[in-house]
Structures are given as structure tokens and as C-alpha cells.
Length: 377
Image (cartoon, rainbow, N blue to C red; front, top):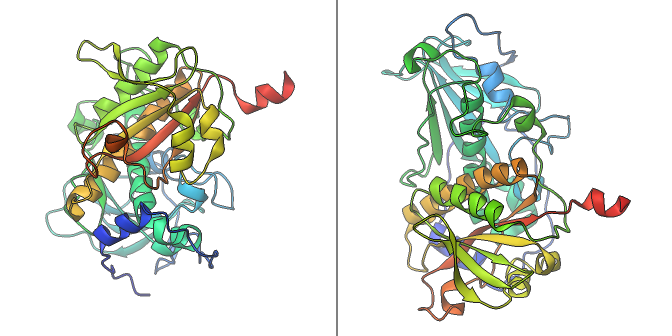
């Protein structure tokens, strides 16, 4: 099997994705999982002091049914284009080596020896099989795939938190075309901890395993405006997770339609007055339900003249931040759904700034009323 990476003209791909051009008819998506060479192997139980790769991957990447659609990280159209390779060093529940991961069967395939200089612990490298997303989204696929990798990176990061592993620093700098992102997980003894859930600081900071396994994007409609305190907390999570790469605001409806952003003192301040949600619904591939959403978080930046490293970095960080914000929203009792496809969404120009500087990169729709509750009310 050919596992070589085919480069893409990312500048052109993003410009087309932002245009009015509509995708063509669906094409075959191909296999839901990369056909890794070598036989599949089960992930063994971790011994004392070992990095538990079985639990790490179950909490972050493993599908919960055979269709492969239900996984702990959201994906545009449930296409799940992200592939994971493991570079395993000493001290892990798997022998050292390089492995491909099958999230449908929760199995690994040994691809060869680990590279020289591999550190103890394990590194997860993330890449994509474009065909899965291109099959439905066509020329709009590349920004969506980068956002998907950001979400998967956050899912792995959260799993490490649950297992008490020292927080891995995600590699989301956008410099590499392949892999597009990576995280290294240290051994428990190296982090000075054991592989047990660590105390939450601040409270509610570390989710329980059942929360990671049960997280799902809520289906629309998502109605009901979140309280200012909850919106402030969710927006602050996104701002912190994006590491200064993007600007953030939220479009809210009742009682007073406006755009708000985080102020330096941690409160919310008005960015612009007026109703933005109907315009956002048009910009978000015509998803009309967004016009009635309780609130819509928006990550924006990535100017028209951005080169490939900045495009990758902005989208990877946006996916990472929206995933953590979605988790924060769910833990505050909100319904939440990422919104990744945006056309002609020049927010900066709409607010009176220069054109082509502040495009919407990602969004998160929020509501206080879950659809299932509406059906039974």
C-alpha cells in the first residue's frame, strides 16, 4: 500500500473553500479506516508504571460502534478523515516500534521499528486521508480536515488529563505538511504522577472518563441564550486554548442581540450591536437553524494572504480550542455543536474593518434547550 503524502496547494484550496462555489455530487468515500499493512494486534493491559495506550486511545479515538461514525471527536459530516500513527518508546503497554491505529476495531498494526532517538513514552502523529471528506464536501474539504485534526488533538489531550498523564504539549505550529499534528505522552513516573484521574484544579477542570466517551455534538435546533456567566466561561476556554492564534467573539440573541468578546478583566464586553445570527446562517453553508441558536462562538483571523503554515496553524488551533470549548459548554449543561464550513465569512469587513483580514475560521453553536427536551415539552 502507498502511504506517501501528496502535497496540496493549501492557499488555493482555502480561497476556493471560502468562495460561493458549491461542491459537486457526492463521490465514494472509500474505506473508513486506512488499510494498514501487517496483521492487527490487540492493545495489551498496562503494567505498573507503564503508559496505558489502551485507555488513552479508547478515551480519545476509538469508535463506539462498527459504523465508525460515533467517535469521541466530532468530524464534519461524520467523515472522520484523521489517521493516527503511534511512535512507541520504552515504558509503554506496547513494545517499542511504529504502529498504525484502527479506531473501528481498536487494534494496532506494527509498521516497523521506532526511529532512532525515540523518547520513552509515546507520540501520536496525525494525518488525513482526504478522500473521506472530499467525497462529500469537494473543494471545501481541506479547512474542514484541518479543523478535524484540531478536534482529535484536543480529544487526545483531554484523555491524558483524565489518566493523570502530564499534560502533553500539542504540536500545532503548522510548519509540517505531514504529519499535520503530534502529541507526545510522557511516562507516568516521568510526570511525577500515576495513571489515575488527578484532582481537578480549578474544580471541574478534569472530566470523568464517561464524559469523554459520551460526548456528542447536539443536533439542531439549539435554542435558548446561555447565561452571561456560562458564556463568559466557555468563551474564556476557547481564548486560552487558541494560544493567541485567533480572535474570538460570540453572537447572542435574546434579550439584546449583539456580538460580545472577552475583556481583559475576564468579563464580557460588546464588540458590536445588532443581530448577527441570520448572516452567520448564510455564511455557514446556509445552515438556517443558526439564525435561532442561543449563541454562536466565532474564531476569526487567518487573512487572505496567509501562507500554508499560518493556514494550518490557525485551523488546527481553532479545532483544538472549539473542542475544549464544546466540552466546557456540555459540562455547564448546554447543547453544543461545532460549525466548520464558512463561505464569504469576512467578519472583519462586516464590522467595518479592512477586507480579507479577519475571516471566520470555526464556530460553536450553543443553546440551553436540547432538541429531545423540546420534543417532550
